[in-house]
Image 1: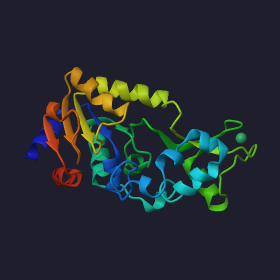
Image 2 (image 1 turned 135 degrees about the vertical axis):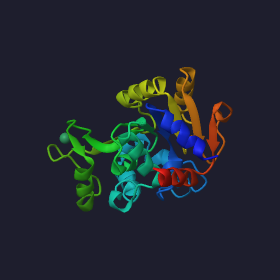
Image 3 (image 1 turned 90 degrees about the vertical axis):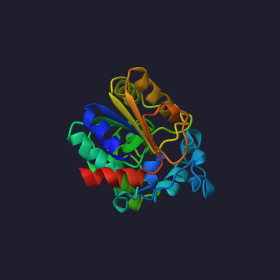
Image 4 (image 1 turned 180 degrees about the vertical axis):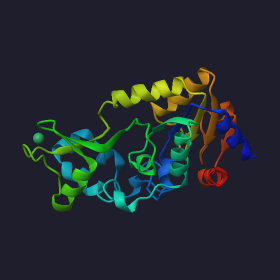
Length: 242
Ligand code: ZN
């Protein structure tokens, strides 16, 4: 039964993958919306509230030190690893992700479209100077809120906060990747949040095959050629055959 997924992947040469929180939770990163979500302890909608950030950026940095800026402690899992290999083999063309943990890049994926933004770039709210993730990580070892070297303005990550517009470039690239793929794999996303929710249908409307691996049901399950629950099982199986 699981060999069917390998067959479809082998027949594909421009597969687009959409990854959601389920892929991160395999690496021990908690989900905002899931059952053990961050919302139980502190509230995702407050941490990523843009007005609150402008008023008091330390709220964001206090709460994210240990789950965004602890990059060294987080390891890519079997899903990240397999996707990076399949990209090198020209089976996967791009990975669209709702996640902000940078683990696809850490695993070696090159074409990653981060539709909820990214902490890989931080920007000074005053002068616009940009800082890479590692620079900000270093600053956070000494400062509660990282400040601009230039003007002492507050640095904000390019993560899309509630109340902000989605990153246009990433979104445009994601739509293109969805519309032009021959196979769309939805991994660890329940397809409840837009714009991610609309991407698989753009793919199937243009004739792409659809594979869904997700613990919870999705509204597109009936359209999927293959449907599995357990990401770990499926990707360990694929990894063993690579
Ligand atoms: Zn500045």
